[in-house]
Amino acid sequence: MLQGTIIYGFINSVMLLLVALGFNLTFGISGVANFAFGALYITAGFLAWIGLNTLGLPYWLAGPAAVFITAVLAGLLYRFVVLRVRGLVVSEVIATFGVGLAILELFRFLGFIGFEYTLPEMLDLEVSLAGVIVDGQRLAILLVGAGLTLFLWWFTRHTRTGRAFRAIAQDEHTALTLGINTERVATVSVAFGAAYAAVAALVILPLGTIAVNEGYHVLVNALAVCIVGGLGSTLGVVVASFMIGFAQTFTATYLDTSWMMVVSLLAILVILLARPSGLFGSQKQLEERI
Amino acid sequence: MAAQDTSKQVTRRRERLDRGIKVRSEDIYALNSWREALYLLAPRALPVVALVLLQLLAPEYWQRVLISTTVFALLAISWDLAASSGMVCLGQALFFGVGAYLAGIMNHYLGLPPGLTLPLATLGGGVICTVLLLPVLRLRGIYFAMFTLILPLMIERIIEATKVFGGTEGLSGLTPFSHPLWESFLTMTALWVALFGLRRIMASDYGLVLKGINDNDRAVMSAALNIYRYKAQALFLASATGAFAGAFMTHSYRFVGMPVFALDYSILPIASAAVGGLGTLAGPALGAFILVPLSEMLRGLGGLRIVIYAVLLVVFTVGLPEGVFHYLRRKYTQFERWTEVGK
Image (cartoon, rainbow over all chains, first blue to last red; front, side, top):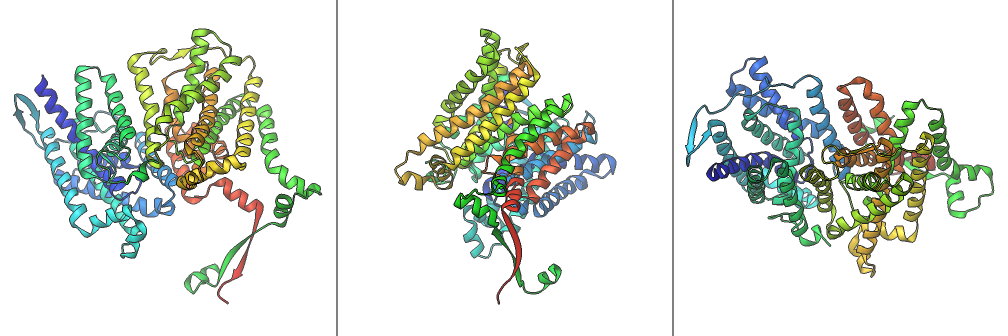
């Protein structure tokens, strides 16, 4: 019982981590608001579904194609819609949220609701971990989660583009004087974050159906993890995912599912009160409170 | 001409100058002609008269829409007041919901009439929300915003989990207003009192301090002003405005339940502000009067309604980032002309 809870808590945490990584990349690391994140996640799921079922493509083609198209779509969206209000924080948030709302509700209107909208599992096997049966898809989640986290950590520290992502959040004007085209970097960052969302969708969605409402949940979860972990910190996102993931699984098991949200929200409130910029936030004290 | 200019070097630019009538009627206070008096009065009196006429002449369905629009306009004003004092709040639903539940509880358990619950819920809601947010008044910018975003969501979940105040069912069968006209004129009066009263406060020295906190809080501190006092007072004004809106809706719908803490009540005021223009109080109210009826008009389209609404929202915010109110005010008070550059 306890072993099962711990193992499923671990998997739940990695799922949160997967979802939060892309959001953290765009919103946390490069400081670009992308509240259409949940919509992009669902878009990737439906794109893969269309590729597999309507067009009959093989999985190795439909999966990467969905990731690529989602990234390009997000980049174009940012370049041609949101870039015009860059710097006006409220307008940025409203514009991206509006785009996300439009995409999600369009899927609902077009009738993408039902149990037939599922993605195939990636690994068809079952493994016994410490006496608990874990299916292949959850194993895939663990592997992909670890891989993406390491890649993000490496990418934002050791590549030119990754360092530019961090630069535009730290000081946009200095970044400009160093020859970084901040608008292009912001666009690339949005596209990159969308690609992460798409990969997360491909590995997580096979566990259930592709539901429009999931898009909203994904956004709230990603936001929560990024706040608790601290904007811009990859390590913070990892730790925060595990805190919230385990807290959710344990309350669901030992208390009641209706307390699940209360516990994670309470965790966020306490963190915000005690350490506003999160566990590993890199903000200076005066930025967060006065 | 314009197409040529972009290809070659820019040789002219648009110049904006205040209209003479604006300068005369505002700076010198020489209101010695009807024209100048009207110039000042018209933009303030016209909306008031128009709203009264609409309320009396519109069909009954649209009268209801007008009432809920006014309520959302109040929420938008409350948002803008907090935002212009340096507190960007993503949880207007907190103010709305606390006011709504207070009125519902007082009416359901104590049997108080709306004449008592409305003022009590307004004051009580203001006090409760201010006390709830006192610990985070020191937080700035996005951190304050995140806290206020989470708080109403959590209260909603707590009500669901503990099943207090009717739990998921809510409290229904509450006392309605005695007459629909009384209902509509009450909201309208509240709207104008809040709009003109708070605008007057923001234009006074007191309001200058609040705006100063928004622009640079440390500079205000260095002037030996206690910014937490000011912030708490602004928060009380804003949350009392929001709580009134909630308490009113409770009696208008004769129901209060978990939906009053829903995200809609947090998002719509912000969307109104983004459409109408920040920092003027009138702008967000105007935004609410654009967005709420728009969403009602689209109701016939069924599922496509939210899609079109969201797209229009994006078009408004991206196409007119300064906001409708700022745009209109610019056109009203200034004229534009092309001038030669670099000669």
